Length: 112
Image (cartoon, rainbow, N blue to C red; front, side, top):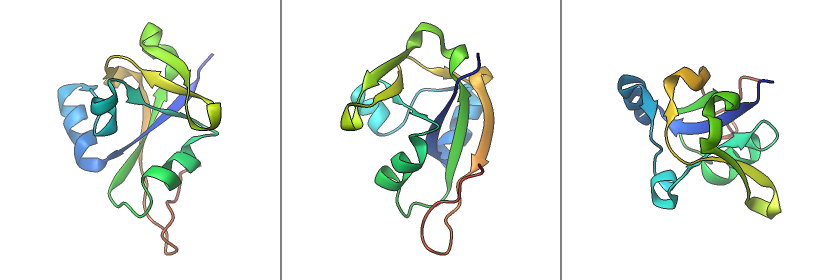
């Protein structure tokens, strides 16, 4: 079963991860000690809350099945379970990378 998970990162941060062959996290991930991800039904709200108005973002789609035991579902916003990665995300786990542009109204346009 393929579980698609999502990570939003600045384009510059993602370019560095691609060059290194893995994603170690950024900003709050490094501070908290794990990589914050979102499920499909969580990602739009996550972006609205934490990335409002930010430009040059990338939406990274990750195959959760390829994260193994590093992936844990833990309570977060409103006690909902969110996917967190304790470790790094190998580039091989990435299914797709899409730009996350701002629309004229200032909200982000998702590719789905």
